[in-house]
Image 1 (spheres, rainbow, N blue to C red):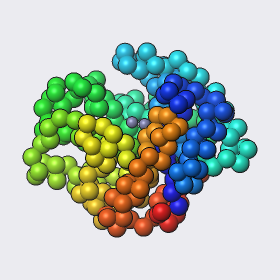
Image 2 (cartoon, rainbow, N blue to C red):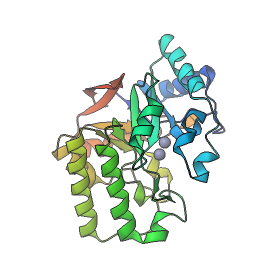
Image 3 (cartoon, helix red, strand yellow):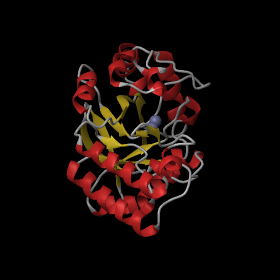
Image 4 (cartoon, rainbow, N blue to C red):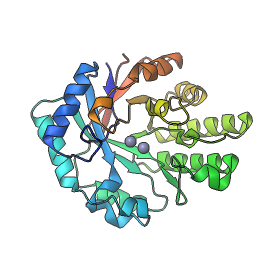
Length: 271
Ligand SMILES: [Zn+2]
Ligand SMILES: [Zn+2]
């Protein structure tokens, strides 16, 4: 089975389009790429219902769309029998776990993806960002502290683009990276969340899949299940380069992929 469990409901020009018609275009694109099931995971900060969570300009500028409309479009598609799931990509906010849970509670999610895009107010995947501000050693250390706390929060089913901090810029020394991978895999195992294998990084400055092979191998050694992701921001990119993501997972000895239904997970054969 090939699934794509990370995408943003947009039109072909990447403009927000939370309509049933937009869902149908994604479903057609997925079918053409041989993807069996897709899960929409719009950014949590695009919705007016989440406004009280934000104090940063980046989010405050974007939280203008209606979460009920987004959820309604995907539920309509599900009721028509289309192979889609209802999800959301949720930024982990240290110290605001209860408020985040309250905002999400009214909706029938299949899947919640946890992300760390900002650490202490600095963007991880924008330039200049966290790495420029703190230097690679401290940026990586602090990013993975946040990611481990996201895992432990109990809010999420999987962690997106798990080593996003490698997006651009220099890295710490090998020994530090190895230690961060091991500590992070331990936390993910203990929290019983999945880890996302994502092709998105191939199209970013880093030019690599997320996560690094040693982090994925450390997760496999601990029995952590995987999810698969393109992180498409337009329908034409659904399922893009998932063959590379599947290859990375297989190289780490994974034989199954995780699918979700109302936040219950099960394993399906990979590929
Ligand atoms: Zn993201
Ligand atoms: Zn995303």
